Amino acid sequence: MKCLENIEPLFYIPFFKYSIGITINLVVQWGIILMVTLVSVLLTRNLKKIPDKKQSALEALVEFINNQIKENMGEGYRSFSAYIGSVAIFLLLMNLAGLLRITIPTESYSVALGMALTTFLVIQGYVIYKKGILGYFKGYSEPYAFMLPMNVIERFMLPLSLSLRLFGNMTAAGVIMALVYKALGGLGWAAQIGIPIPLQFYFDLFDGVIQMVIFTMLTMVNIKIIAEH
Image 1: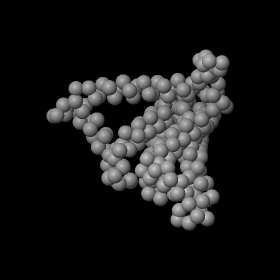
Image 2: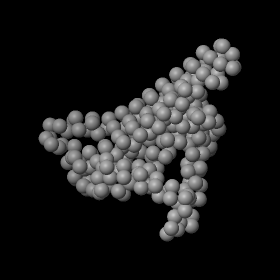
Image 3: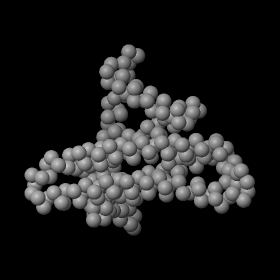
Image 4: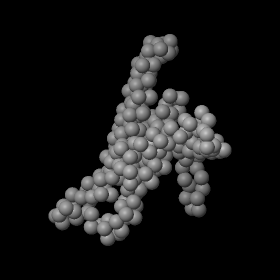
């Protein structure tokens, strides 16, 4: 199975008495982080009052992210622009890695869960910052005290639902494409050249973009709902 191959470590890094296994998913994520960092540095150097085409494209992207946050969360949440933008770009590049025949990290549940837990921790941290530690725990008993168990379950179901939705959809797309290529392989290599292109476009490109949009939209909605609960 492809998902099992992805969790087999390529090599190990010694850490005190332990050895940390480095999988292909980690390598791909590090590569994406390095690439985005380098591109960000190059695009933000020598910014000008009168922007050129490169700077105009960058400003358009930033403005688009700001507008999405304003429309879905409100003006008071502009401080989340950096986080929402980073999540969207990072998740999109991971989802589209399959276009280059690179392992898609989000087909591994550990990666999807890591993304969901990051959002979960950001939300909890923001609510504590906004309402204080007492206000944070008080929110679990609103609007009525007997709602406490359900509120706790609802709050902690967020990372589970986010991760399962992302992992399930990306893995299903990967499995379908693997089955298509395997079936066409029986007809000869020539059958694998043109026939899978429409499916590749949908499952690797369209589905990858859609899952990024859903994840970021749910992140924004949950930040707003929980912060204002």
